[in-house]
Length: 83
Image (cartoon, rainbow, N blue to C red):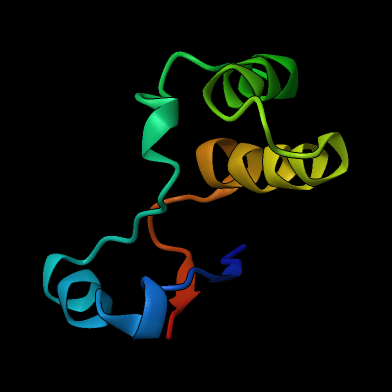
């Protein structure tokens, strides 16, 4: 089953052309570093809290879910809409 995802291409969509040219999408959160070894939501949230300690905990829960889906659910071949 192909899923459809919405991934914003930076403020004002400045990365749209690069996403299309390279055939990839990316997300920010640079301070998290490499998410490859993060296997579950708890590991992602722990790294998020360490990287962004001043963010509110409710927001961290939402962001953790978004990052988890990007890392573990998004698959090559899925459809991406971007702006």
